[in-house]
Image (tube, rainbow, N blue to C red; front, side, top):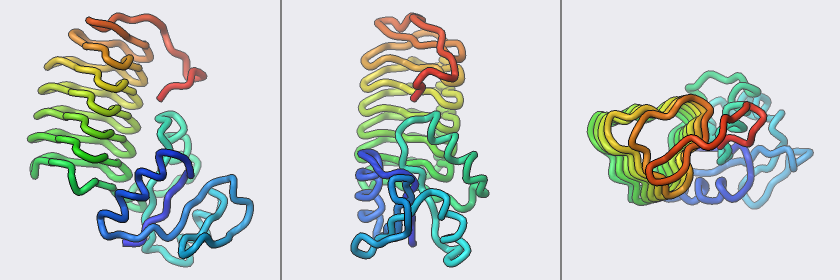
Length: 215
């Protein structure tokens, strides 16, 4: 499969490696730092506004938004206004994923992650290195589960949530849209939308606005 990345930074380097390990080809990178179409080896570099032109030339290319920030990832998807079928899922070969799990388009599954039975992962979500998604979890779009985080059974994670590294969420808990869970926190009760929660157990510390750098 020929894949092009949207966004060129640290996160894209990891996705580049995953695509290569999947035996797929990175054929291009779209980023507004590139003001005109050019080549770097066998990979073209182009501004983001060139996406539609390139897809007209080669409609078989599939895309991954390689941006770590949840809010910007959503804004980019809306800016491009392409059907979800134009995006592909990137899964590191070392990930352990149940056959009954469902994973959305544009989602990236990093090394050594575990996704267990009947988990549902949305579109354009990041499951980062060593994270554990237990059975019957429901994870929305544009979520970022940071390295070594653990979601125990039947957790619901709504759109845009960011879980910090090594955070833990106990069963039957809901994390509201665009909430942020601090690194190392343990969540033992549901968290409302747009709240930053930290600690052991996690407690709400701040109400977040859309202008805050969520994700």
